[in-house]
Image (spheres, rainbow, N blue to C red):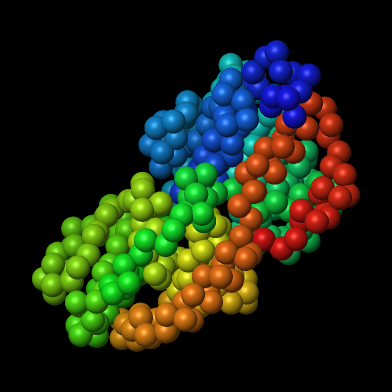
Length: 388
């Protein structure tokens, strides 16, 4: 492409990212930002997110950040929802001011409650705007905004029915380049010790933490051959770690794991919620998983994500409502004994991955900035748009 912009190569492209709230929204955005910088180190990146949100901490490690005074409307009760609604005009003002100062060539919305105000502001200001939808079932805000943006980048082909056909491009969910390198690294996992990696998302999952601790009694006989890596979230790290220690298990407990490459490289089985970014990472690194969807996810999108991966032979789904500590222990012991089954699941996960998602999305974004706003049939829906 001769630089990231072709005829704009004399000046740096400015890209604004909108969204956050959870790692599932932030990490795909970081993967795209890294790809823009890889293509052209002169690219200017600015993340817009909630004041005090997780994105403020994660993004500031590598990119500039602009806070918007906004809070979630859903899942917080009537009083808090009304309070959140009352500050929407403030969020709108923050968005307009931030965009005028940065003057981006392109806005990329990645979801989360901070995404909506900035995308609306960008659309009203006439700034080219795109969506990156991670989930199989999109949220209401993205379904509405999808009618007004230039392009909607989907992770799953089945999601296309929710958006105008002319706007969609199925590219997969971007994964950070550091994780992609695991695909080509030799397998360094311990042959005699079975490693389970349990995570409940970027903020942890209290219910999963409880179930795992209850499973320890049934896992007593596996102590010498079982190792656990557990991301608990900030609230539960203390008591969970104390329970492992009291029962004598080999474990590493973290409130939040920044070095996901190390965790994935060591584990034989991932036990997790079913956020779209976790699904994408499992496919990218080729890991078998036991998925326990969050039962209150909007529209049941986590269950849809999990069942999509399970249908392709790469995962097993357990519903939280029927899950006990004894059943979880039984599943772990079963996988410890069935290494061939794990290997097959890993192969299936790797086969449906889309490691080039970030590269393809950035390429299309560059064409949009250059004024080539149409995507050819072959690139938008052809060979590149096979199932992720």
